[in-house]
Length: 61
Image (cartoon, rainbow, N blue to C red):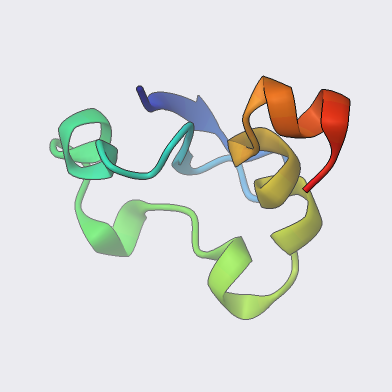
């Protein structure tokens, strides 16, 4: 399940989790107001760490 978080770089709303529930957790936030750091490459490592499951963190990809 996904959850809403705040980006540590830009302070805008973004998500963490499996990626299948993004619109449910960010549905009230216009796309123009959402974090786009991962799309611009500035925060892709942080986004991966936040969205990676706990088993992947333990055992690796």
